[in-house]
Length: 293
Ligand SMILES: Nc1ncnc2c1ncn2[C@@H]1O[C@H](COP(=O)(O)OP(=O)(O)OP(=O)(O)O)[C@@H](O)[C@H]1O
Ligand SMILES: [Mg+2]
Image (tube, rainbow, N blue to C red; front, side, top):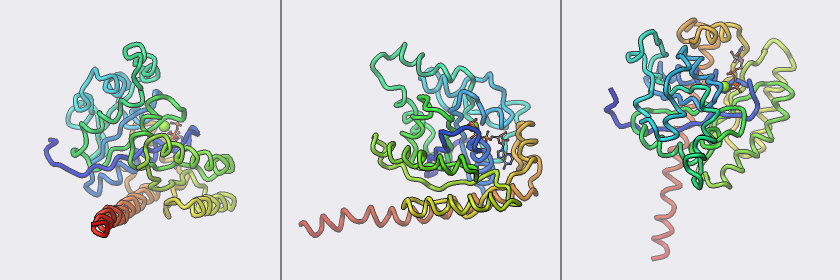
């Protein structure tokens, strides 16, 4: 099953604000990339188990809590469609589930390891799955719990999820500050891959105004900014999530599924561009060495 070696991109999806589409975007992006033949592992790092529920997986399986504590091997707890009866995950999507006990992770970890850092536990887990997936998505919680901080500290890429509303726009600066702080705190490689604007009510003038403001905010911040594609508000999403499914399983022809396909193509294009720029950056030290010689 897991035999090919693939270059793996680790993407944390976050926003310290709650209910802004982090989980929905994670699952739908993974599903859209799956249609394109890209294989994803979604790691549920939220004690509320949003990704686990959103994929219709029970919240009683061993998962991130045990893996982060080192009690289980990552691949032993990953849920796949063929492995668990009654599970129907989107094509090319696998899940490392969470249970409510994830909320006790930090205290349990500190009980066992008085002097070690609980946010250092995710990196070795990612090393064990690297090469097996095209994407690892880290679905984070709207708080500064250890698994969330670990995600920010360990990922290569960050996707910021936001609504196009006044409150969300006002909070974007905090989100940007967080990313800069993570870089300063040791994960210098963390880069913003983009901002997903979701639940946009495109029939209202005010929502489109916020979409424009978000685009501008990031242009001036000198970061990769909002994706061109935004996700509109649709009750079909809520209905699908209530069933533990993505739109790709319930209504693959829905307009919003199409938006996620377009977003997935943007993600691939940005990564492709970044890899070319990286090659140029990697080339630089050689040039310097040559001139020093
Ligand atoms: N495009 C959309 N249209 C309508 N409802 C949506 C859309 N996207 C997400 N939702 C709904 O909004 C709610 C919050 O979304 P979601 O759980 O993805 O946010 P979150 O940021 O992960 O939340 P939390 O911070 O609690 O983890 C959910 O009920 C979800 O079904
Ligand atoms: Mg969530």
